[in-house]
Amino acid sequence: MANPVVAIVGRPNVGKSTVFNRIAGERISIVDDMPGVTRDRIYAHAEWTGRQFNLIDTGGIDLGDEPFLKQITEQAEIAMDEADVIVFVTSIREGMTDADERVARMLYQTDKPVILAVNKVDNQELRQDIYDYYSLGLGDPIAISGVHGIGTGDLLDAIVSHFPAQTEEEDDQRIKFSLIGRPNVGKSSLVNAILGENRVIVSNIAGTTRDAIDTQFVTEAGDEFAMIDTAGLRKRGKAYENAERYSVLRAMSAIDRSDVVLVVLNAEEGIREQDKRIAGYAHEAGRGIIIVVNKWDTLKKDNHTLTDFENAIRSNFAYLDYASIIFVSAKTHQRLPQLPAMIKQVHENQQRRVQSSVLNDVLMDAIATNPTPSMNGKKLRVYYATQVAVAPPTFIIFVNDPDLMHFSYERFLENQIRHAFDFSGTPVHLIIRRRK
Image (cartoon, rainbow, N blue to C red; front, top):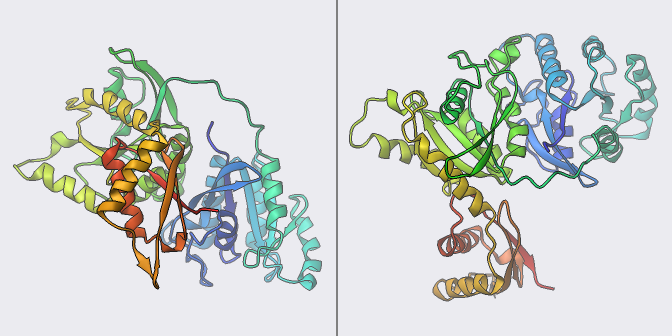
């Protein structure tokens, strides 16, 4: 089941990114007093009272040089289309503005739950002015301070109250995978080529695919798969045509539902910043990853073309050094028959469990080869390790002081685990914990 999506909307400089960071629990969006400065990540995983959800800061969607009111309109449209719950942020400092009323009028048109949050209520005196916001007609306003965290719990309670009830998912033995990437990298063409039949409309125009489409199929070897084709940009206004970053939002729910994610690159265009942003979300979600370079047949090649492209991928996607790379062509079907077996192998690696005794033997051998570091005269001691989860494989390492675990030594231990066990295609999470 895909996580619910919560979108934050509002006019510039009301503190949307501050509220976004407060809910996400870290400074993800750039925060500045200059209106429209948000240019960084616009999505995050969040959790409240055991419910996980995806959070979107629509202010981070760059719409070029359009006037702010035009941007507000298009960002609100995105929220109304894509979110399960909309948080409309206003600011007590400036009071209600024409732009606030314009957003409110737009939100009247949606059937999605809308929560009105009045930000920058940093003291009790300002709280008295919140009653003016009842005139927006969006229910009870919630007084919050994104900077100080005041009212955040009340806001999150209201958000979670609108989520659908959790249901027990059936035990599904199919391997679920999705194809993600920028518009027009050839995702729909790959879907058709893998299936061997035209189940999805194919076009050179980015945004032809309207919604995520799940397609089930069985290979000749009897392996069952469910393929989730992420939709491209919708053809509705410049928000969809110009904001490449918006394609990340369309991939989020598909990634949440996938066991393995195929990150699709366009060989003709090379690697773009948007490719790294989309792949980063799959990595952070802990999914198995295969990098698929499509349209390989269109390049003029020499003896170094493949190696040079692979080196470029490893350089630009340094955090995906565990991911396999395959160069394919949806048009000629080059190497496509290899994909199901690769996906199955990555899925098996995601589910791999390691016995604690064997794991600790590997770590002790590693430490004997490369002794633990010291800091300020105190030496790191590794006592014990155990695996606590799969998908992705997650290990807790008990030590005398977690602060002594330098990131380089932690990476060394991860590499030793990967060398001993096959975790190719999947991230590995290490949790360093003090032994009580």
